[in-house]
Image (cartoon, rainbow, N blue to C red):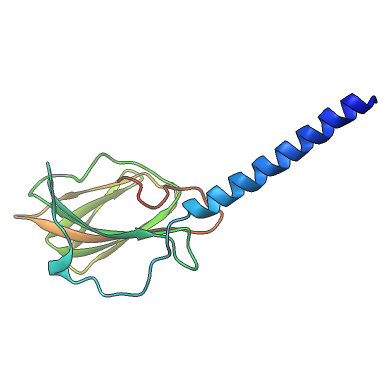
Length: 157
């Protein structure tokens, strides 16, 4: 190897190392803040009107033990679904606050009245709709464990 080739090799390796360090620094800077302990009072959560009812986004952040912890409250108008059946790698708990939710898991529908808890396992096809009279509402708690792929904080749903 000539001196000139050796110089270009060293220059390339140095540039690669600098780019790697810079990328890692920007990746760390892009990490969202961890969710602090707190109380999220019902009246303080902004209400977003949707075509099917309304939604209250409570939080969507990382914690010390999960890559993403997200919770929101959905209110569905009579007979309506929040969205089409879908699947995702993260897991989800639903706490029915009022009304009757029909939960469909892998094609099997079951009624979940107020006070019920619904669990959606990773990658199960699931959906739900308001199966009662009047409005129904439920709390959603989703999380992504370290090393699992799933939506990042601030993602849609």
